[in-house]
Length: 138
Image 1 (cartoon, helix red, strand yellow):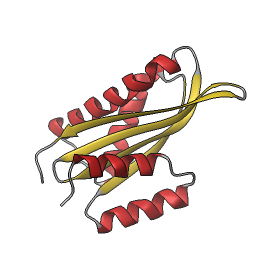
Image 2 (image 1 turned 30 degrees about the vertical axis):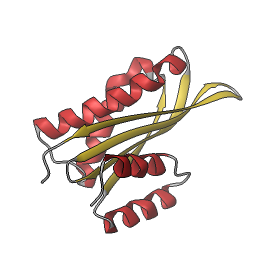
Image 3 (image 1 turned 90 degrees about the horizontal axis):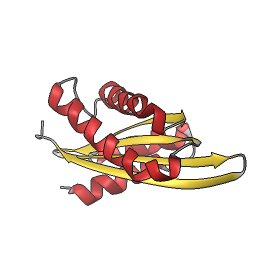
């Protein structure tokens, strides 16, 4: 049985994977532990496209089976994603960035992690945001 810190740790590990193949391998290893994961790449002006980041997180979690298409689960993903975005927003204002959103869930624990590089040319800042929500276990 895993608790919220274990699910958050899994989301962070998934967000910092450096390639699609390592991402897929980690998702498979997590699934063996009954932790369901999904990840999606993001980029651009994050502060002005918050809704796009949230939508991509919801769609990725649905497609991968982390959540189902219903109001409560979509709301949990949206809330955790927004929380993670707000943690990186102060450094992202007015700049472009690229990175990954990772979603992990085990029973009622749900974590969303955003890991990005934000900046101009080679003057980049590395940021991470993490949000957590609770959902009824399936």
